[in-house]
Amino acid sequence: MRLPVLMPAIPEQRYSCHGCGECCRDFTIELRGEDFERVAAQGWERELGEPFWIDFAGRRWLRQREDGACVFLGEGGKCGIHARFGLEAKPIACQLFPFTFAPGPMDARVGVSFACGSVRRSLGAGLPTHLQEVRRMQASLPEASAREQSADLGSGLAGSLEECEIVAQRLDRWLAEHALAPNIRWEGFMFLSQSLRNADLARVRGERLGELLDTLAAHAPAELQALEVKSPSRRANRMLRQAVFARVEDPKIGSLMRVGRLRSVLSQWRRSRTWASGRGVAPGIAGWPAVHFSGVQQVRGLFAGSESSQIDELFQRWIRASILGGRAWGSGLYGLPVNEGVAFLALNVLCAAWLARAHASALGRDAPTLEDASVAVGRVDRSSGRARWLGSRGERLRVQWLAHTASLLSLARAEL
Ligand code: SF4
Image (cartoon, rainbow, N blue to C red; front, side, top):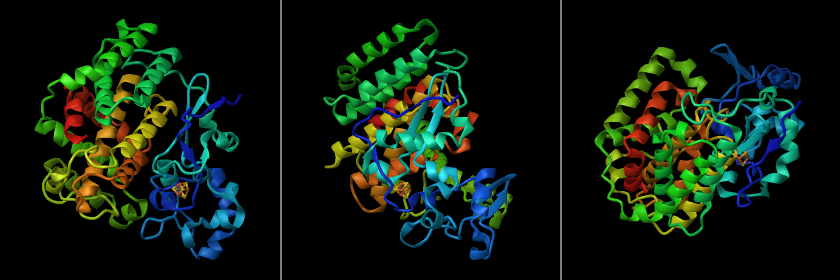
């Protein structure tokens, strides 16, 4: 039986595709057997003069051009398959984007990717208007209907659906609170993330979990204003840069095949060393002007410019949609337990703040604008939950260390 689907209840969040073609330039699309057969039957191989697919690492992908764009991307950002045969003729991953599924025990949560410019700008129709379309696509994706257990609350500590919901609703209430200044909202999010990560959750079950979060949230604004927060350590700053690198790195299959695996791995290792050192030019942010690490330090915090309230609104929609759309833990985020997933999102916020400052610095601005923040959120969200290495043990240890040493909060005070 198909699981019911649940859209995030965020009236401020809208979306309709505006055909910018960004996703067709950004993503590498894996083809399922049915996708391949459907597209093959459309006769493209003859027209393109080459296969429309590529086999790599035991799987089949849509071929990309030299610049990384999909081979079907046509004039004015239009998809060739869509233009000729309609939406349902495309591979299912292309039809689904920017929506995502995260199945649980009772329903499948529907998330939206902020890698899409229309989602970031909240352009188009309200999310509930897409429900029928999303249900149709769910029928083509067996994994979107496969019932999953509730996420663990902490490592090895099984959680109930009600407990996961308590955490989601309390965090959502904090993030949506109108009366909070942006810095307090996001420092508070770091504070709540660290508290969840460091609490003995085995002793705070059921409604007591909600009471704990209510108490922390009630005292957070006054406490954060009075709290002396230490500057982040060199190690914390290095870890943040490495986390940013892990989120912007996106090897394209075409270039992997051209240069070979070994040379790709070596070049990636060199780039990662440069990010760790924080010296010189930050390598590997494709399509960006050069970012000098020293220049990023000169840019003021994420909310220091004149567009702080618009940036705050964007970040609120992003993280609320991640939590309510099932992309904060469990099946929507590498199977992470709730407390690690929330800390992972906190680190995503810090990475986007760093990238927004980096983008501002590359364009000679002294504080990030909404455009800088939007580009940064798009970069971070395109890999979150999707790039396999972000679910690795190394990344989990990084998140745990940053939460355990209260570095999420100290970095927030420096970055925001
Ligand atoms: S990025 Fe969004 S708006 Fe642009 S083509 Fe893709 S789905 Fe449409």
